[in-house]
Length: 466
Image 1 (cartoon, one colour):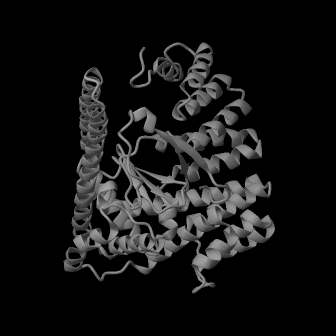
Image 2 (cartoon, rainbow, N blue to C red):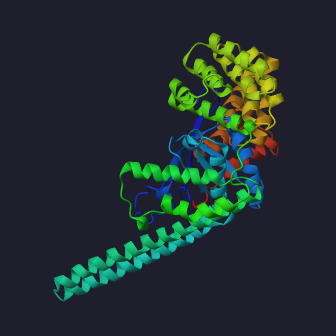
Image 3 (tube, rainbow, N blue to C red):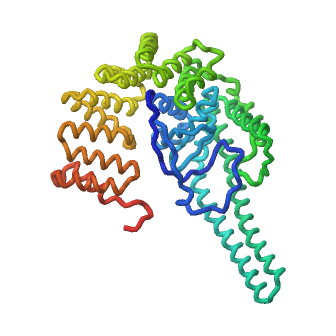
């Protein structure tokens, strides 16, 4: 989510499961993986990504995972949820904006890291295969009984055969759900271990589960605990309460600095996803605090006029000259006001101040340089965008800006290769190969660009026949 405009894309995934959804609908028999894939709307924002990465870093270390080995993806979804798929952790914006303290989200992250470190996803695949086998065996047994009943003209036996087939599927489903519940419990326990090892409280985890329990109670729903993939919220609280309270860090609170960053993140998400009044509701107890001011500046930019928004952003940047995201906001406003040269200066300052070295800020700087239309600035835009892409190859919009920059400079093969890269990382492999072939025809054989184009042309999707 670029501060100015909501930057979203989609990602196809086959997720391991849900952390937060206690009201999981009863599962049908497992379908092939391809049938369970769906598009996930992804949000990109330098400030939010840096904060969530800071939350995750000590947890990764405690779990024996390297910080770079697990990708963190923000999902544009209002529900309180998180899940893992492979070596990626997906966190909904709804979870981020609903959580009142950093500790609540850190507890969510610790739980998901428990799944990754425990290899739960790989074992779940084995369980899915076993469940399918059980279902198939049950169906075959039932079919055999049905055939025997029909041959003997015994209707009762035929009906029993149908029941036997259904029972086999039900046993498979319940066995799989029971396995998932056990792994959720294991991940909860692992989370407690990581939180204690990093000197953090587990109170946020309990707060989260109490929120789910309250929501379930208010819904009036009656859920069979054997037909859900997670333990019931009150059961989770009962299992964790005494262990969490035994930690010497149980009553430790988040630092004021971290809490402020968390509130700023919530303000940004609330304004972009829920409108002008959303942040005002969040910070009604502190309407003049920095987070509320930040929300007001963003809302004025998104829903008001650039001049007024710039005044508010300038005031924030002047009062907090070391905050890169106030400079980013200034850049976004200036771009909207068609003042790209000034926007480039603001983004350059944001890049210089940014401790996380976000590729998004680097690309925003290049985009502003490109918008000036000046040859020298366009050449610099190519350099800055490439710097950003070197740290984040999946920044899809960056390839579009890079192609535009190369096009303005008359470097057509490079523009076509950048377009091919964008299609490739976006999963549009057919289009990627077309543009890669076009680029390669104009490049010197064996050059780095020619070789990269060949890699795209030769790429074969896993599982597809050559």
